[in-house]
Image 1 (cartoon, rainbow, N blue to C red):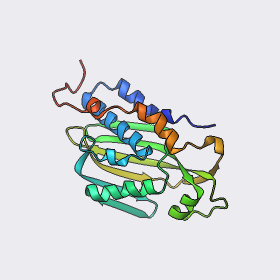
Image 2: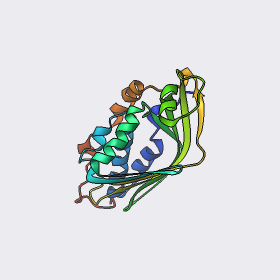
Image 3: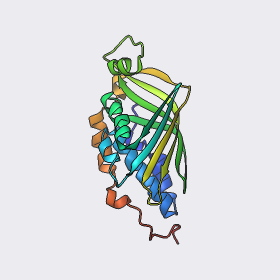
Image 4: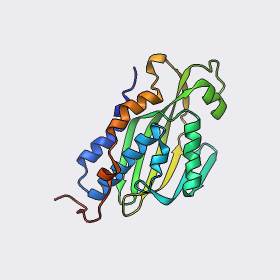
Length: 204
């Protein structure tokens, strides 16, 4: 059954609706905008000063490899490699999240769409059919840190050992164009999500 890409942030959507702490709600809304832009391949907008600080720190644990990116230039390369792999369309299942003054943490199963040729080229996967699409599923734990203005300062990403690859039937494929058509109308403006320190931390 084809996944409804508009539901990829369903757990976060519910948390935003229920959250009474203005600072925590701003973190969640920043994260949601960030996540939607990422899967739409529009990473340049993630690195705008309205969403991300000028000196972000990323640390990505992927099996035996750890990727560290310090500063906007290095972080830009992380996103550019992802975009160049033509694999930005991802949806989440089995998600659990927490938000606090320290930031946002989540555990979920990531389901990422790949064209066979790109998966073989980028990940070295041995595949019989390079023209078909595949879904790579894997548990991820992520921790996003934010400053006092609810602006992203860093990402820490941990990939689980349960990575699995399956051939994706054509009727399950979600293209980048479809992802953009369905998600971009849902993205709030930066003005709408901007956090104002004058807001009470907890709603009355």
